[in-house]
Length: 300
Length: 295
Image 1 (cartoon, rainbow over the protein chains, first blue to last red):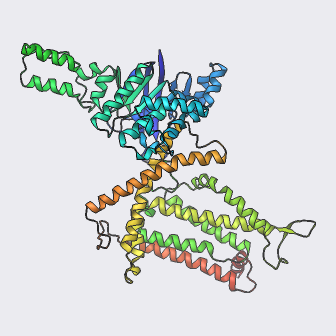
Image 2: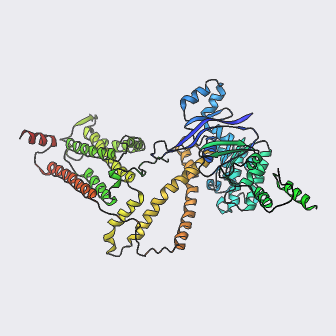
Image 3: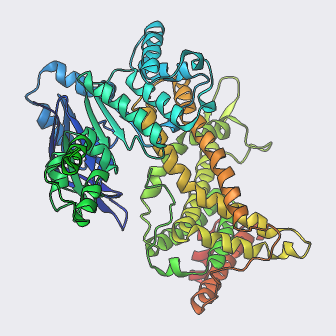
């Protein structure tokens, strides 16, 4: 059952500008509930624009995005038509964009830029309070989500600006998950982090996904795609080119065409093949299998 | 906000190709023309009308949509009301015998039609100035404006004033306007997805939502400026060194022609000003024009 759907979604940047261009053209996708989706493509292919329509931060120029019963489009006629057959509650729900933003949590690239409060705890409470929680409730969920991202209690009353880069990012993510969104969208969550920071963030995302939430990640990191995603959406030059699984994507020859990086493990396999490694190297998609095969070949 | 009012748009029209120094001069000259005294209200409106016509023609040549001005006026209506209140309710000088009363209150306090005209006049001037600046900024690349400014600051060099520092500051400031706009856009989006609504709510709520934008913006501004100064140091920037420019401004024939046209327009307006201010009995330019025709 799909949870997010786009239909003929097109977005044009700066319509009036002489050098305007399509950031997205005619995208049709469906994202299922509980999926772990990665959106990949080279810089400028429209990935970030696409996910921003999920949160109504960008309105599609034509076509629409639908998140459950919430319709997102700039075309008023179309919206009216879409809402025609819906129930009264849905129509009422559609009037308040806050309802959508509560449902779809969005973590931007470098989310540390969104911190502004005097203390970490207050900053994390900010989101839930905006979505109508009372102070005590907000505090409760804030503490819970801060613990979830691994920020110790001694930090709660400190200023967010004193933290290190990775910690800031975790606080910012806590600020989003505190409003307990059903769908979590992350725009390059690991950009600019050290390997350890990356691991921590991804472990956190995985944990969130395991609670049954839909996770959508925009990324350039193919290792991350291979290790975590169960669906990959490939965009190229504002167009949707493929919806597939990571294994299929990385075992096909299209990677170069989309100018995507090859994951480390496949690079390693290719090197082994080139060196004339004697064992069977086909259909290996994770490190464990690779190690097994190598051991097999060495008769260990 | 990507369609910022007055943002440079790279068309290739004659106005775009003109020398930035000349455009700068023409901007100042025409702005001064807005503020010369032209006698009574009929004269003022005729003269400003002519000026508006000239400006609209320039805008059409420069491919700027004149109607787009009005969308930017939306934010000025508060000021308009403010001006209206001041000009209508404050007495128009000591001698009120020549004024036309609009409303006379029982206690003798009178509101005059002139107050209304005054508001309109001031507002018209403001719009014209806005249009002029718009023409400059949307036809001239920010760096070119800096070069022009540098050129105009040249005399200050004679008294050992470090003009190159001023120019560097200005060009850095101009360079970072789009960057900061981009950044504020990003921060706004991030806060919006945390449930901030920048458009709705009462003033107190609005102020609170603005702080969620301002504080992160300031923080990143400071860190950016530190990084920038380090980067400049690393590349051997010496504030007192002699600068050379990658782009050398040249004065073409078209610039000479436009300079001539600007001076011509200027002198016409100065004539109108002199005529209406110093000729006894000349209370109407129309009368003058018709008089000349009859002669």
